[in-house]
Length: 410
Image (cartoon, rainbow, N blue to C red; front, side):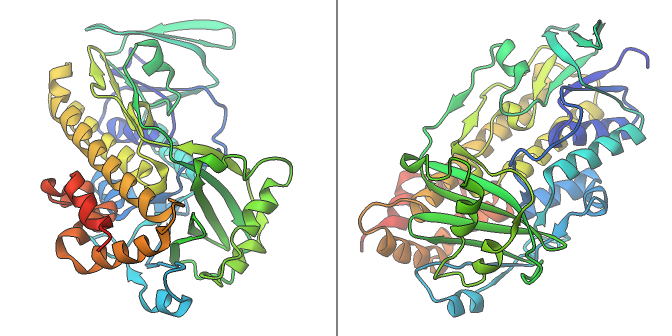
């Protein structure tokens, strides 16, 4: 390959997708990846309808479906505030946007592999197992990396940092990362043997101060998550944590959880503090950050894959629509992303208070708030924005006054 026009550092969801989009349009793309293979690291494996709409716009929907992504048709809102029968009667159809059949349950490693393969098939070069990656920013950026004992330097027009939450690119170039204080712990595990559960039905519910989620991937496999108060951070620790995780799905409000509790672990069980992070200025001379490298939404509301797909579309359009790749050219991306992440922080705070807080009176508060979110047309848009995109919720609702309306005692 001649000198690449774009070097993408990180071959994960955002990096692989962006490389595929750019290479498909004839750009010379080099992708550098530290790992030799994508493994289950308990990452996001659910994509909201607005993220699926972004994938359609990128022309990568069939790539995900061919890799085994599972379309989810219904959300069943099991909760200790209602009987299982009431929850099932209130199941919500998820074909919420034109041209989108529903959200997706995806294998994170599978999606990474599919996007990487699409990029390579379109002409991108993927180099795995690299180390000691350094970036010299500027109008003529330089990327240096080591592979098999040899050091190579390349001079692209642009470097894209897509190397995840612990981004080396972000850290070494002194991008300022802002973060909220964690209020919850989030744990996840991939489980097999859930063949009796309908693969088109996803679950989001709360019981006993914990939020539980289930996203089927097809073939009896399901990605399960639990969220609970951060002060109980050692709930899932030690050699029996996989069994303890499964047992947590034996729930009065969710009889079907027995199917998952009786399943077989198909991957590691990991638990991490949950919070939001963001970089206010993710574009400098010669470098732009995308995906988790530019900051992530609290995983409690499941926005990570959707955020990554919109990042890819916006940065990709900038690179394909003109010859100006300066920071000024990314001003639209920077501005929209900053507001998008601010709105997602608002959603995450509301959902955490609604579903995980264990303060006295929390159950009754959730009953009242849930009714308001369903019956008040304005407040309903707060809930809807989580699924169909934060920009859909009117700007004036992102305020403390709205939170007061949701959680008012009377």
